[in-house]
Length: 119
Image (tube, rainbow, N blue to C red; front, side, top):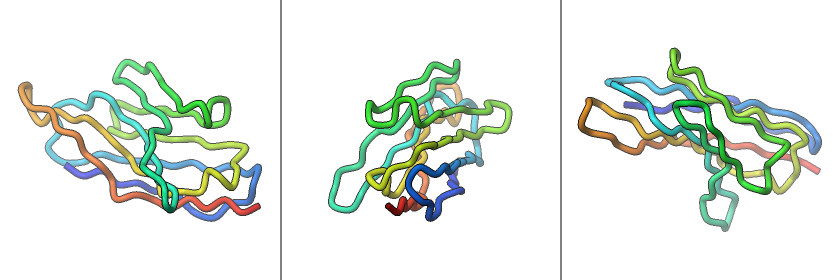
């Protein structure tokens, strides 16, 4: 199973960016999906999560600015980011809990995509 992110890049403050993540491989079912980020010198932190049913959870720092969504048919999860701030600069990682069969679920991570917000 692989998670591959796309959509990172350089954007000015108050700009927008959309991240996408696609899961592929031997997938029976994808449960929770999410986005984490890690800024230089800081620990990785949760940005947003979404369940298979569509329930969402956001870090306080991004509420009202970021929107997570998923397409269960395509095994994808997106993160729409608006009103970006320099403090949003980080490597963003896709995360998913994936069942490879009825009995086994594993946590997977993407390799990350860099988002840089200039002031």
